[in-house]
Amino acid sequence: MTARYDKETGTGGSNGATMRFAPEGDHGANAGLKAARDFLEPVKEHFPWITYSDLWTLASVCAIQEMQGPVIPWRPGRLDRDVGFCTPDGRLPDGSKEQSHLRAIFGRMGFNDQEIVALSGAHSLGRCHTDRSGFEGPWTFSPTVVTNEYYKLLLNEKWNWRKWDGPRQYQDNTSKTLMMLPTDMALVKDKEFRKHVERYAADEQVFFREFSDVLMQLFELGVPFTTGEDARMRFKATTES
Ligand code: HEM
Image 1: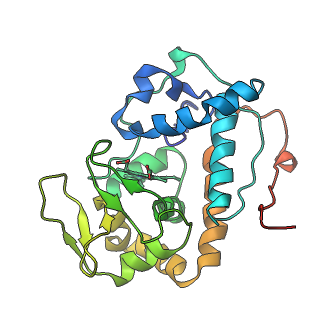
Image 2: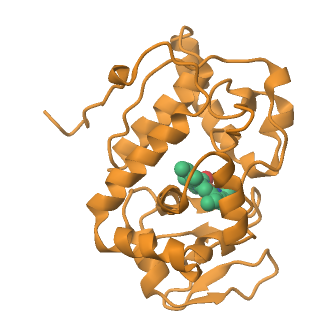
């Protein structure tokens, strides 16, 4: 949804919610996100005044917070657009590639090395599905909790190519239940990326701060806000009084 912004043309990004439409919703890299969109449909029916693009980004910041992740400042202002604004396929990252691909994809959105490493930490959540991307398995042992475990595992675990029929992916040597994509492993193979993996593995709070910052930027790319940065809201965790 938000990972296809192009800083040269100002197209793509969360604004528009064009993933509602067949051409974009069907792009390989969006496989599986239909489940999330369908999950939010009853909320949209209840509150029809919110745009899809505000709803999806708001749901993302809430979900990350509920999964014990950092607060991500958020403000409304996204407009939904029609099918003509769908972005071309090929703007999303391909997990089978390596560092030059990551820099090309995220550089187009205006992100630097540190930000690429921070964004990749989203893979502390969730898993790969054979019927979606073809890859299989979770990155960490706690895929419903935001932690810096992804970076610790990248550094401390020994990773081998998994021997299987599917696409090339790595498997941990100890439990043989975890996975890494070639793009994940690129973060420790590349010297410049690795510095940030080490910083995040050493201090979860540093990761949380920089993850929050970069996600806020990602969710704001290309949005024609009519409000200033002081309109950003910070939601309290439900466990706080
Ligand atoms: C660095 C480049 C990236 C690549 C190559 C990549 C690739 C993938 C792939 C192949 C999957 C598995 C999809 C499936 O089979 O269900 C996946 C899942 C996921 N990605 Fe990424 N991704 C990247 C960056 C990101 C970013 C920037 C975010 C968010 C900020 C993100 C969040 C997620 C999450 C949460 C899942 C789990 C989905 C689930 O559990 O169903 N990824 N990604």
